[in-house]
Image (cartoon, rainbow, N blue to C red; front, side):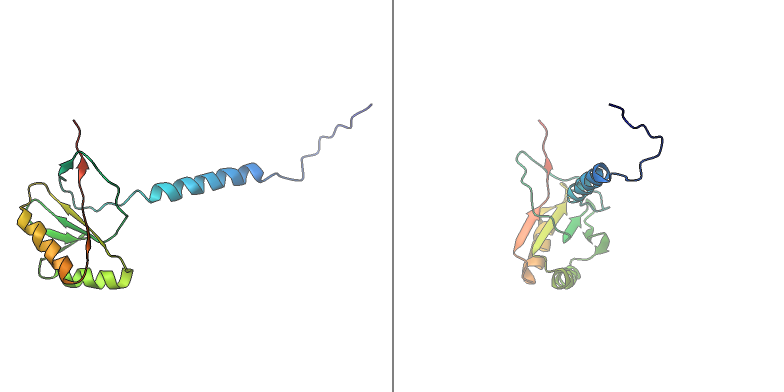
Amino acid sequence: MKFRMSNEPLSIFQYSSLTDIIFLLLIFFLLTSQFVISTSVKVKLPGAKSMEQSTPSRMIVTITEAGGIFFGNEPTSIDMLPSKLNSYRVTSNEENLIIRSDKSVPLEIVIQVLDAAKGIGIEKFVIETEKKTI
């Protein structure tokens, strides 16, 4: 039995292994992109022993140590906050507000932000915390 040997290149390229790798990379980037939600305003979040995952939201209010209030990345005042929250809520249909407050901020300012949000009909609030290490 004689086998035929050929030095000709293969004319058919198998794409199956290449498509497997592409699909795995696509799934990896889709999954990891869901966990990256951060703003550029840096605050020291209060610690909590138990930490629950919240639904991702882009409606984030940040309160800095100096008492500055930010909606997303843009500074705002407590008087302008309800109109900005309402306009964003109408365009994005989000009902979940995430409050990122520095741990040294007085509770009164956080309550003012909550009142501003409740005044326009937002009922779901999440106060962001860090996992406390023992």
